[in-house]
Length: 155
Image 1 (cartoon, rainbow, N blue to C red):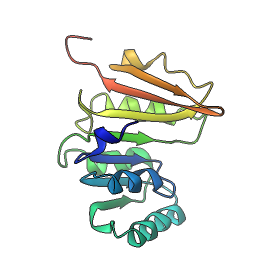
Image 2: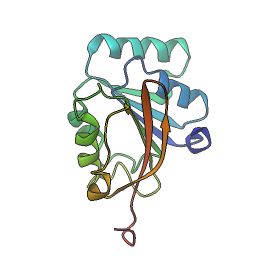
Image 3: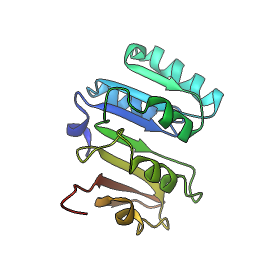
Image 4: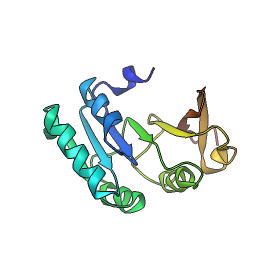
C-alpha cells in the first residue's frame, strides 16, 4: 500500500510502541527510521527488535513525549518521506502533531503522513492546518488517514 513511498525514504514512526511499523519500513528499504516513544519499556522493546532484525544502525530511538521528540529532530536532514503515527485513540494527539508539522521542516509537500485513528476520529480541521486528506482506508475497528501538505497554490 505505502511501500513504494518507503524505498530510500527517511521514515518517522511516532507513538512507536514496539517499533513494528518503522522496522517494517527499514526491512522494505527505508534509508533510516526515527522512532519516538515515551514509554521506556516500549523504547527498550524497539531497541531489542532493531537488534534482533540487525537494523539497529539505521534506526534511532527517542524516548520522550512526541512534541519534545519532534523538536529534537527539527532541522536535522530535512523532511521525512513518510511519517506514521498511531497515537492513543480519542485524545487529539494526532491533531497536536499535525499542528506542529504545519510549520515544520520535518514534512513538506512530498511527505506522506499516515495517521491510525479510531473510526469516529474526525479530520475536518486538516485543511485549516494546510493538509489535504488524499486517502482514507476504513477497517473494522479503526482507520488510516493519508495526508499531504498542501502546496502554496492549493492553500
